[in-house]
Image (cartoon, rainbow, N blue to C red; front, side, top):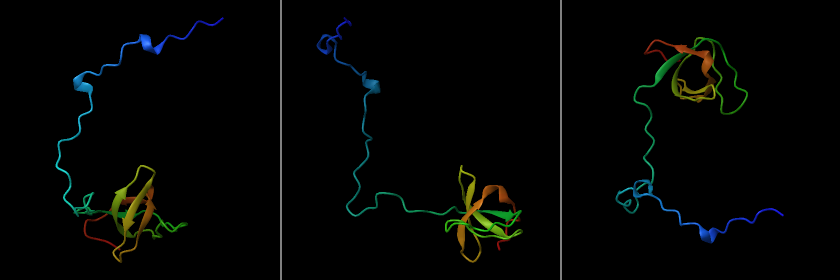
Length: 108
């Protein structure tokens, strides 16, 4: 016969030391009508990159570029893609390995 499970009533209640207890942040509540998140602010000085090879998009979120194009690299993601924008405003993702440093004032 298996041993009986210990009774929960026999145990002391869990006591959490004060330094480990949750303390809500002491911030003022948001004002009525105030946005709950900060507005998006693009980087002040996007990094310019030159394409070392052409890339043809296969999906809507990607961007077609030609070898030698210069783009603004807006965000580099850990998954191997960089969000880029051309001078004409076209934007999309490009494989990060296709990008190299470019002269600072040249954008295709």
